[in-house]
Length: 350
Image (cartoon, rainbow, N blue to C red; front, top):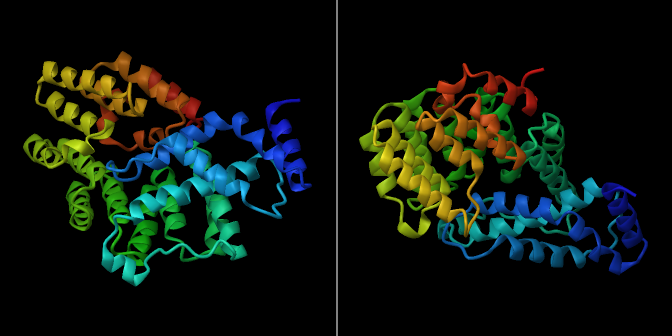
């Protein structure tokens, strides 16, 4: 019996009352869940302490307490447990949101007892998982989730993320709506800023990036993206200033890759390679995406290593490969046959 079929059998046994059957599917999909949990955590503030393993186990505990769940198959199980991951991870950021947002009840989760929201979350989670697989059918799941819960900020953000890959101008429209839904969240303007970076409208990218930073001055990931935009504009000094404002405890793989990029465009190869070594040491203790290594190597004009890490990013299921098509940073390699080969492997070119 292959793995998906085995999982489906176990889930049907659990639905029929065999509570111990839930203990067996988790190890079969653990690696996949661990990868998804890393992605959720990387979207949160860097000063939290929850680890990927703890996030998975907490989601599993919540799942084991569910009753009267009629599991359809492996995809249904994966969608529901990803929803649990997302909810647990989202609480990290909610704990540090402003009191004003809390009082307004912005983006407050509805009761788990409300059927429509539970179903919507499952469809949204599966759609989000498919975004990371660069699966164009992800929008079908996300649109269904929107139809069930029109005012879900998380789903709107994921729809915007989908269009970041497939239609950047459409992404801006979706995310503008998300920003109106929750004007106190730094995420929609951050995403919009990245859209404008990919559209090469750098002034707008900076404006939206700073809107995000005004809401949350400690949003290290967004500072790194603003720095990346300044690099595209050839303004290394402004990029440096943004990165210097990142708190030491918030430094991550993305901010280090941005720092290395700034050094590289200034011709400071040795210093950039020193930051690259720092990233490699960091990767020994926490997750650093291969895509972030690729951004450094392309800045260093090292095509061979760029493609090594882009292919590693493909193996890692990085949705950033979808952004690569529009990121100015990768312009220097678009004439390389390996670039077209990678696009075909991803599914962008037939």
